[in-house]
Image 1 (cartoon, helix red, strand yellow):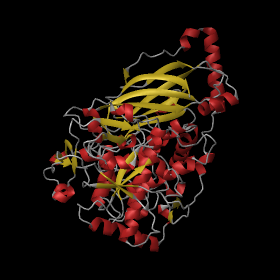
Image 2: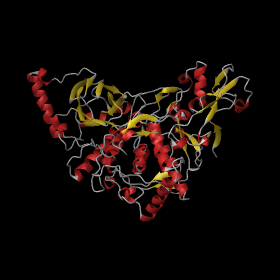
Image 3: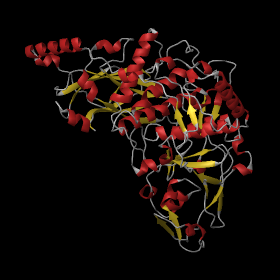
Image 4: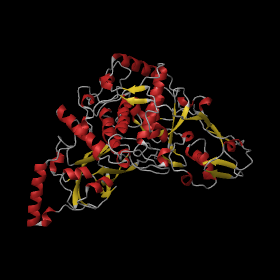
Length: 597
């Protein structure tokens, strides 16, 4: 049973109230506001790692002890107390958490003067999530293209009831959609860092946040139809049978339909997992083959360890984006493929509006499924054990409309959360890009003959960075080590690292190739042996005081498989080609290098 913990400890007569936001229906009632109290300055503050329960009930005139863990929660200004006494929050706690009581609306205006307010209703009390000790599976999430009529009736009813709830209800469809907006569009700042937005994309938080999000969303739907076994569907876009818009979301009369989508992308059109905003005239069977290759690259070649697949660490005070392979692609391109072709690409194509489309939850159901699948693919495919990862936390509303704090450590085992996925086969495991041996050999002989005749004519220059990506960039990089043994490759992955600056609110994409010639410029077969991966930015906004937000992203691509397939193991260096696809006019490549990870 969940334990009840107050948003703040009431110890003085000084009360600070959070004022209602104008024109915000979520704050129309006084009961929806949270008031918290702060310590007078004369009371000494002591921080301990393990505060006893009696500390919460002690005399306010005595020395007050705070549990180090409370510094993580953003509950009623505890971090502010630390700041008052000159204690740096980052030195006390490094896991991340949203400053719940300081949620603020996005003041940036969208088309038609629409303003976004993602903030949920406030709560005076937050429950700590208590995972079940049982591993009994009660919910089976089905593939969306395989559901039957009986299931669909339940799904329609559950969504209809959720949409019928008043917007002020945290379980309502509007409020559930706002969850994604709040955590991804700058509504929350990090506990202890009021000038730094909390962002759950672009780091090791990506998978656990969305898993927790879907968990509560699913439980709410089940409770609305009084069926604890109800499970949301997943969009099986990694399988040929699921590589179109699921038909259950395409009926205009259905509660699952969203008119704010790209109308061209019907259930008859093959999904492009490397979509760049342009619809290429590619036969469906060729598109499916390309998609399977993308899946192999992102789930295997570019996912040899936790950091490559799940994203890099994100600790309190951190900024910038360091996404994992699957988040970059196909997660990002699927968002853009579904979203309507407007300047802001609503709904699915922009983080602030993405969850307004019911298909968002099916899309992220498959993203979550891929995390589970990846764990089964190799001995190194393990979750992080870092306490800063495990103790990072989020707050959601549950099926009883109660605010619940859940930590990353609580969501690592889907069995303990009571669900698993309907099994289907994984054809992309057999879709490793086929090396073009004949071409590789021909190119090698051509290079060898040319070097023998006049070496300088074959040199690819090393580019000086930073450099704007306003055209194709080709640069030569020396490798840290050539001719590595299999054991060395197993111990350390050779990684291409690219530092990028881009505009956060604009969709942009560029592709990365190794040792390729001019074939990357063709529309067909862009994904092949030479293809290393892509940079993909799904638009999102931050509160920047009217200034456009520049985002720094670190991309990491696994090179070991790719170099092996190209027959370049013995080469001292490689050519890296960066090919702009869309929205790269303001993209700057800050650095390109190779590391052993």
